[in-house]
Image (cartoon, rainbow, N blue to C red):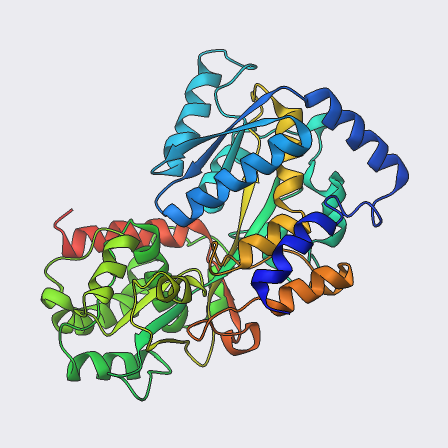
Length: 408
C-alpha cells in the first residue's frame, strides 16, 4: 500500500499510548494526569533551524491540543545552551517554580549541565521517562544511546525523541567511487580541490565531523568514553590536527573560511560548489531531493568502520510551570503515530526510538511502507555506530581548533 494511502489510516487506528502494553495502574495514573493537565500550555523550547522540523512540531501541537486539550507553544531556539542559561538564571534568582521553560529539546553537554546542577524535573526524586506509557515500546535493548547520553546515564531524566547517525551525501553523477576511510577522503579532496568542506566549529555539525575524525585518529577509541585527562590534550589530539593540516588546503576556499552552519553547507552542495556534503540525519539528503533542493542523483555513503551516532531527547526543567502537561507531550512524542510520521523523509526523516517489532502489525507495516528515498541508507547499510565521546574531548577540540585556525 503506498505511503500516501496508508498514513491517514494509521493516524486514525494506531493506539496512541500503546495502552495494550502498559500496566493498568500506570495507564490509570497517566489518564488522570493527562486529564488534570487539560487546558495548560507547554512552552517547548526547541531548535528552529530547519523549516521541516518546525512544521513537524506544529503538527504535533495540533495533535496534542486535539487529543489532550494542551496547547504546545514552540519557543524557537537558535542555541540550546541559551535555554540552559535561562533555567540557570531563573533558579539563581529564586524562581524555583513557574519557570519559562516547560520542555526543551536537548542532548549532550546541555543535558549534562542541567543534570549536574540538579535542575531537571524528577518527581519523587527519580526519573520519569521510563514511567510513561510509551516507554514500553522504546528500543532500550537495541540502542544504548537511549539510556546513556554522551557517556552520561540518562536515568529517566529525559525522554528519547529520535536517533541520528552521521553520513555523507554526494552527487553520483560526479563521483563513482566513494571514500571508505579518512585516507581515501583526503586523497579525493587532493584530487578535487574546493569540492568538500565542513561547517565552522562550534557549529554542531562541524564539531560532529571533527568527532568523527577523532574516532579514526585516536590511538585507542575506548579512551573516548572517559574524560580527557588534564594535560593530555595536545598529545591525544595531535593526529587529528595533523590530518586537518593536510586536508584544509584542499577544501572549499582552501580552508581559509568555512560555511557557518548546516544550512550553508547544504546550499553549497545544492549550488554545485561541493560534490560531497554530510548530515547527522541519514534521511536529510532524501528529504532535500524530495523538495527539489538537491539533484536527484544524490546518494549517501559511510566509512567502513562506523560513523558517529547519538540520540536526542526532551527534558523538563525542575522549575517548569506545567510539568504534568510536559509529561503528556513527551509521551505523545514517543508514540507510534508521532514516531512514524517523524521518520517519513517527506515530513522530517528523523529515525525512530521505538522497537518496531514490539508495535502493532499495522504500525510495523507503516514503517515498512515508508519510502526512505534513494539517498537514504538503510539501518544495515549505515553500519556500525560510533558512540559520542565524553564532552571534555569536544571542548578541547573546539578550543584547539579556534586557536590553530582562527587565531582564537
